[in-house]
Length: 633
Image (cartoon, rainbow, N blue to C red; front, side, top):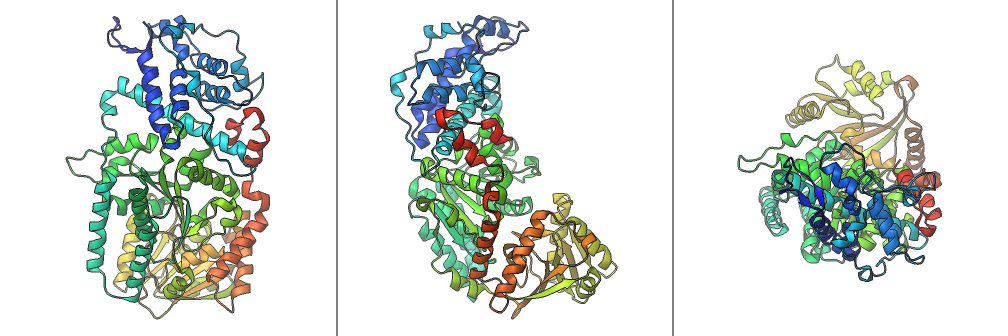
């Protein structure tokens, strides 16, 4: 008898049988990978992953001997032996999966390191006893069902390997947890169906409509919402959603996702957001609509214990467990968490990736995608759509020119019928370029307004300006250095003062620019990219209560107050160039935004993949020799 996991019981009566573990992991991996037509490959990886535990040495370790045993290399070698074919690298693919199922995906490397060295190991424990219990059908594995984009075959196959790895390590973790921690295992999966979530959403929207006044803005918001619902029945793919600030794109994009899932039998919704401050707000909105046990908020500042829920709905442990594999119906997370997971080689980060298959991925404030990694990020998103049944929605008021960077077959389809008309309808501010301003001149201007917001590029500059005006009454300072609870409290206080018409002067970093529903009559913004200027303008006359709000752009000439990065200086330079070109027309028009991103991406050039990730993959893709560790680093 061979075992996979032991207990404290010396008679082994309740130890986990190794054959059972391998078959369980194989079946669960198959279930995950069936979402992208790779179930047979995933099942075989499940059988192979712990073949090394059939060695006498590993069994002695389970019995208590203090010895170190390599139990993953055996299965990796066996995978290459069983599936050896120079034209069909399934064996090497299995080697990556099995060798890395604990330590992470390895570089192929050489005889001195990496997977290559592991496969050439001479002294490994004899695992041949597996033949007495496990039969691996090599004929069941057919060709890879992949459709690579031109010149990206290596990326396609490496991403496929990563997704299969995700299926394996999640299945291995879940079966091990079920045996070792059955109580914890039973806390998983306690969420509601999308049929129920749809009904909750419809009830919420009906309540909003019943309370809404019949205004032009509200009629336009309803039209945006209906267009999103109608577009939800379109075939899966990449979409853009260009909605002006204040147009209700958060709920409208959710309406698209729910209808898309209903129409195409998809599985999850991922809402990807650049800032934790926006996540905190949006996740709370979604929890209020769908219930806390159906929404995962996942970022570094989040504590599941703070989620409010009924006494009969103990979701804390369920939420904590779901951060491991993103199995909730609705997941709200950061750009950093999302894209780092897509390129990581670590087991813990890769484990969640297979749940992106057959999902709707909404990139909110998509202009904030990391420019230095933009090409690899777009390649990953394109793969998820082309080979894994996902749909991507690029959602923003200032649509970046991503179509020019995508393959022709992957270019986004706009959901809104007339973005230009919407922009004109929602235009609620005048934008004036003031040119250079000293901090003294700026401070005088700010104290001259009863209600004003000033957004600058750095924390140091924000603090200096606040110190300059704080002696006047009712001044506030916001920055990412504040703890989330304190920041939310301050923003709530600011909103109250604005609503009551009281004096309120706020100095903030750009954390307030996106996703914070706040409404000032006057906004000042340090020179920056046009997308950020538009976001700042979205905090001015947001609800259209004034005939027109005032937005002032300025360039600070106090160098000691700025401490800007080279990136901030670069986008400010391109932003200023764009403003001068469109100053006599409309600084925030869609044409201006398009021009800005065209200039930005042209200027960046190869900097859109600053680490050369795509070239690295394609260069080493011959014979399946991928640098997974190098990419992750």
